[in-house]
Length: 73
Image (cartoon, rainbow, N blue to C red; front, side, top):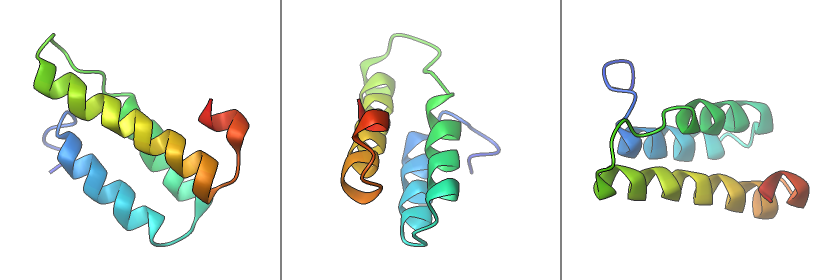
């Protein structure tokens, strides 16, 4: 699904949650980094809201799971 539409943030959430369950910090970070590279193309609020939630989840992961508060900031 992501390969067809990189702006499908719900699919990115699903992939990030799947990767989080593996506890592989490198793969989790790579997934979040790949997801946040897909900045919404327009000003539609629904896209930006999901995109911001991706950033939020990434920061929470870094702080609480990885213990890296510097990356969370």
